[in-house]
Structure formats: structure tokens, C-alpha cells
Length: 300
Ligand SMILES: CCC/C=C/C(=O)SCCNC(=O)CCNC(=O)[C@H](O)C(C)(C)COP(=O)([O-])OP(=O)([O-])OC[C@H]1O[C@@H](n2cnc3c(N)ncnc32)[C@H](O)[C@@H]1OP(=O)([O-])[O-]
Image: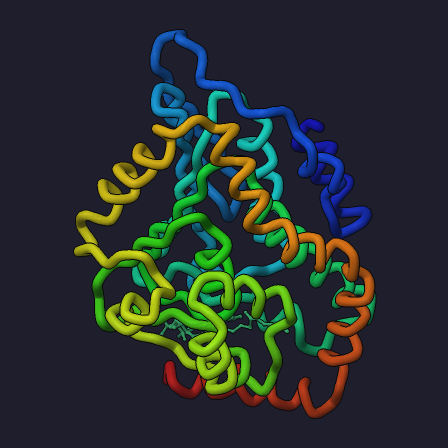
């Protein structure tokens, strides 16, 4: 489906047609035509595709903090879909064009004082982002070049491999509990699949934001590198993963992730309704408002 048609579909329903993501044809190696670089950009996501390497870089560029608004999520899904359907692309590196911030997570303003319909549309877009990324046939590498709380951490966890800049000021984690909200089961499942049950249990209950060295120690990120080497290291890791035959790697990935993906697909609407009734509670709205005020105070 072409991008404008996808955008119209998402504007109408809040979701991309799932048939687009599942059961797609196996990825083919890039064509032997002369090396080419292509770029396409929406407002909030910049994509550069190196056809000779078969690798795209997706850069988040939604200042000040790359929060995951409905617009951002829509653009993210459209960009990912374009790459997924592009035979020249076998892997994607996710990173940020905003200094010091990978992503600040879900845009809190999308979850405050809005209508039930808006919450439903927003939550379907969050689900869609995760379903598409977690089920992607491409190799996905997160080059985490800044802080990455909550939904930002989820994006990194959803990739195949995570490399973080070894800046002790950068933190990462599912800190929802600190906001007085609860990460849904599929955030938790993704986290457990990366760090194991015990670490996930305490980290989630405490809403921990882990410094880069601690995130590495608990296995939340696979490696740390000096900031200036992050891009090169992500490219080297990507080459290593792409050296394997796509079909074997893709089937293995599906085998490892299917149960968790199927769980959300089977309970998608129920999950939307859970989100709406949870986020609409006055006590939750109050917690979110206080948290936003705290962020503003910290700034002044
Ligand atoms: C069930 C649901 C599950 C939920 C999952 C989630 O992801 S929940 C999300 C959990 N996410 C978090 O807990 C992360 C909260 N954010 C932070 O901890 C910090 O902003 C930072 C470390 C990301 C950047 O620090 P920094 O000193 O570089 O920047 P700064 O702090 O000065 O902020 C600049 C401006 O951005 C604003 N803004 C920031 N984040 C958000 C947001 N998510 N949304 C909207 N706006 C946000 C902030 O208010 C300020 O606005 P102002 O005053 O200019 O109008």
C-alpha cells in the first residue's frame, strides 16, 4: 500500500492494516545495481537507506524530546512499512537526531484530558508500532544515543540488539510506576524476554531508570560504546547479523517472538478498553498532571 493510502487508513482507523505486516514474502538480497543512497523524511522521522549495504537508518527528529505522539507513531509506522516492503532493505538502525534524548516515551499530553475516542486511537497506534517492530522481518538495531524512559525504552527492547552510548547521564528503563501508571502486559513481556523475570519484576515495580552502565550490567542493553563510536558499532553489528541467510534468521525470530505477539493480537481490543478505563480514572489523570508539572518545575 502506498504511503498516502496508509496515512489515510491510519487517520481513519488509528491502525495500519495488519495484513500488511504478517505473512509477507521473504526478503531478497539487494539488487546488484550501482550503489545508491535514498532518503525520505516525514516531519518527525528521517530515513536514509544505503542500498548497497541493504541497511536503513531511522532517525527520530521530534524535538524537544522525541515524545511518541500520535503523529510520531503514525509516521514511524509508515516509515517502517515502507522499508519492510522495500526489497533493497534488510536491516534498520533506530537512533535519534535530537541530542541527548533517544525518546522520552509516550507523549503524556496524548493521555491527559482527552476524549475516549482519542485514547482509543492513540493506544491502537502504540500497539501498532510495537506489533510492527517486534514482528519485523528486518534486523533491527537500536543505537541508543540518549535517555530512553518508558516507551522509548520499549522501542529499544523491541529491537533485535541494543547498543547504548556510555554516557552515565543517559538512563533507560520502564519507569511507568513512577508516574503512577502501569506498563501493559506486552511491555512487560518484551522486557522479560530481554532481561529475565527477576530483573524485570523489581525494575518494573520500582519504575527504575537505569544508568547506561547499570543497564548494561542487567542486560537491558547488549553493549556500551563511546558516543562517537555508536554509529560505526551499530553498522558493524548490523553487518554481522546480515551475514546470515535471511530466511533462517527470520524464522528463528518468529519462533522466539510469536507467543508474545499472538497474545496482544488475540487481546487487542480488550487491551484498548483496559487502557481507556485505566487512563480515564481521575486519580490517574491527577498523577499525570502532577508529573507534567514536576517536569516543568525541574526545568525552571
Ligand atoms: C499505560 C501507559 C504506558 C506509558 C508509557 C510511557 O511511555 S509514559 C511516558 C514516560 N516518560 C517519562 O517519564 C519521561 C519524562 N521526561 C523526562 O524525564 C525528561 O523530559 C527527559 C529526561 C526525557 C529529557 O529531559 P530534558 O531536561 O532534556 O527535557 P525537559 O524535561 O525539560 O523536557 C522538555 C519538554 O518536553 C516535555 N516532555 C518531556 N517528556 C515528555 C513526554 N513523555 N510527553 C510529553 N512531554 C514531555 C517537558 O514537559 C518539557 O516541556 P516544556 O516545559 O518545554 O513545555
